[in-house]
Image 1: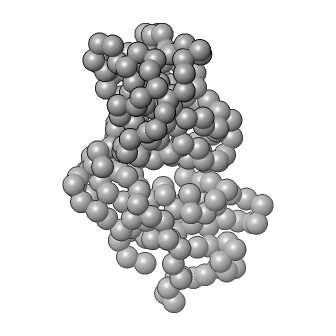
Image 2: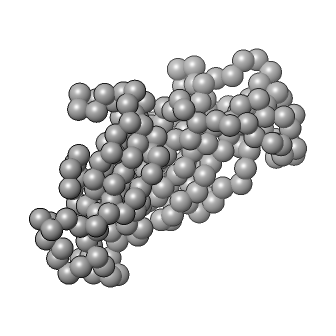
Length: 211
């Protein structure tokens, strides 16, 4: 599925009016691409969608956890519609936008954004979420397909055991690649995560194509 470009914005955008609060809820949603956004708590991030044709608009289609992803503003930038959010508490939520004609309930298209807020740039209270940081940050673009826990290999020191160190296999499809991971391919990367105590968050330690 085609990924929608997502990047952090640290500048002002021109405000544009959104759908009125009295607009009827969006009905059944068609299938659409899902983009994963991993961001540290407290940081700004944005969701960028192509500017629709006259008479059409993107609007929120489903409830999401505003304590995880708090909407702040919306505007236009270089022919795109930009929705600005602030990452709140650690957790996950899905933000959904639907393309509708005026304020009608029929969704002509839908875009799904899985927002993952961690405790730090490469840490999370969930070890499987911390493992996702093996995927390079934007402008690299990838769609996660699975995160699977693996056994630690004999060659890797286990430290104090699986409560402190774990290994995951992260599968993803690259839509915007780099010199190491070109676009248009699926990849599997191993990711080690660790923590210093059972009360501390899990942090991405290292990763690569082999354990």
